[in-house]
Length: 75
Image (tube, rainbow, N blue to C red; front, side, top):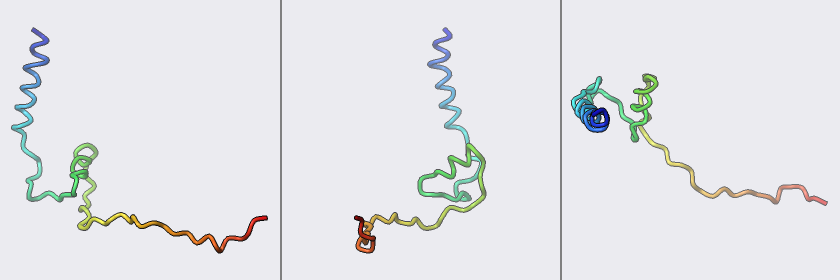
């Protein structure tokens, strides 16, 4: 009987409860970042109150060229 309660009833009750929960802040008043990381971190650790960056910056992927001709000669 306890296995039925733990593995069938409890997960069903938790899923129904999760579907009925409403967010604390309405969706139109939230600031979003592309991956939702600030929302997840704010939920766990508290919000920092800063807005997300408006523009994503690309990573610099060009090859780095080194000029080795200026190094002193080794003997």
